[in-house]
Amino acid sequence: MTTQRTLIPGLIVLLIALSFSTQAQTIVGLRAGVHFSSVSFTDAGGEHEHTGIIPRVQAGLTVDIPLAMGLYLQPAAMYVGKGFKQDGGWLADADNEFQAAVSYVEVPLNLIYKLWIGAGNLVVGAGPYVGYGIGGTWEAEGNVAIGDVVLAESRGDVIFKNDVADGEYGSYLYGKPWDYGANVVVGYQFSPKLTLQLQGQFGIANLMPEVDGKEPDGSIRNNGYGLTIGYGF
Image (cartoon, rainbow, N blue to C red; front, side, top):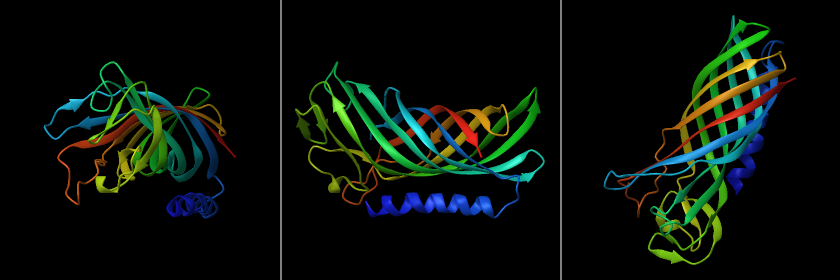
């Protein structure tokens, strides 16, 4: 909880400081939209488990910092909703749906190029992101197996821990809290203040928690894509 309280204000202060340290062309903006999230799960035997996509919300503060003609550095501080759903599979009984909805604080750092086309600019870019999981909830239609424990409850909390030994009864351990990966963006800037943007996000970090201090054989990685509207000031 302490990390959450200090991380979010720190990110906002950093972005504001960056905006004042650059030239007047810098644009500070708000960005919000939908994020369609899932996870890629591979068990210890190398078998891939299918997971479904769930819609979540994303919103935050962005800064477009000019570097050269048409080239911008775009750091951001974002709240991003993530998670997944699964019919049957490794968590729920057959024909029962399990869904985990989680929250992340993320800092993407994209390199953006704006090309004048028509009445505005085509926007393309890519870059890394780092995020920290701060909690969430799970719900299911039937019994859920969390580790070796089968729960009859239909909902509960989602937690983030580095080791399964730190898990809590009734809570679903989503994975390690720190996440990182790559973003790809494409969009259109209708005016200096209004931008519509598509985003693809590919998790690189293996979120699978350790087992009594030992690295796991399987892997869990976040994936998703989204649509946002940005408004600059």
